[in-house]
Image 1 (spheres, rainbow, N blue to C red):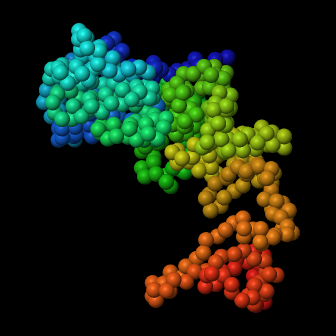
Image 2: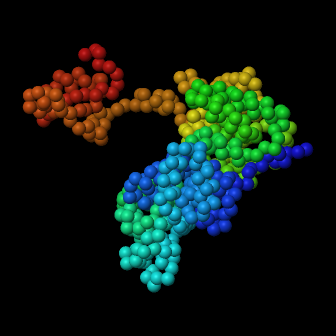
Image 3: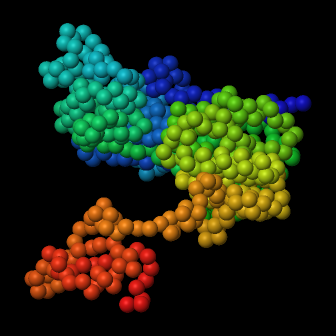
Length: 532
């Protein structure tokens, strides 16, 4: 029996990350031909070109999460501004779908040709690496000293791209900090004809280990124009659909993916303008990935616990347990099956559970989901467990995906279940207090399965006797001033603030005021004072 891996593969161009230095040295023209310039990349390029043409700014950083294509964009910029005429033409041709940008970039291209110098970041001394590039025969080992005495290597128009520059920063080297500051000031002063582009995952300050380092790196960042590269959801979806190559889609699967896509599209139309144009074709072309998962993978790849996975492309090609490749090799091509949120849960649980439970943002939500899944497996059947896993994964990636765990999204995530079965599962899970419906938010949420019962705990302390003298000594509330009275009359009136019990009030109110203040404000701890 044939498996899905016989008819589905991941396109070769998506199976590796880009190394700019290697691309410039060994890369072929085909690599550049296959590059897709997306709107987010075009925005970065427009900001970059506008600064170069209209200001003296020559030091830049491109910042973005793993898997957003920063290095590919860096290679594209090198091809566009470099001296290789054929590569330049290929790169320029990709700008034709952005006519306004093409006009700006043409002005930049025609201004002058540039040699391209690339450097891959490492945990080392940046001075040594730059010295080797620009002063290879100098007896002086310090780059800044050479720069001050002999800036001539930078008279030639040059594009210097440092990929993974964060490695120089994360080494917490004050020498690297000082070098980047002085070098960027030199470039921005117009003394040289070099453009510097650093590519990194987060801003300089985020790499600092102490507050002092954070402040120092913040000053350095200020010398650079930082241009963020942020992928839009539709871009991620487009690339994902391009990465998955299905040589054929079996009829049973066509109906399943059509049903799932159409249900999800109905949900998206209420929330996204032009949803049909943006999503319809791309959602179906992501087969055999469930459309819900295709919208989740982008936000998931930006989670801190998944950053070692680097990108969704690594996920597509990974041989990890319960991953996409294992799904392809274990699923018959005639099976009505999609890689759905329940499969994504199994994949995350098997490979990243130890990282998620130590993540401050997602740990509680994940642990709670595990508890709900355990209880559902005892009280219900496999469909109950599938529903819980689906709600858990969608909730984990809610920010960024735009998906709520409402009935339409759950139907799209579980297209093989009828609406009646899904509703019955949700009813059971609600009865078992594993799922609750939020009517105001039109969604289903997992119950917090913590064993802490707040009502029961409140009962324990309801009859507890309170000694207000001890309480007032322990919690010394500051006096309150009558501010309005002071503003109107100029007389300052101060009032002490104390906790009291209702039973103590009558004696306190009838006692003469012996306090140094004008009076006392009593906070009654056990009920109203209507009987006074």
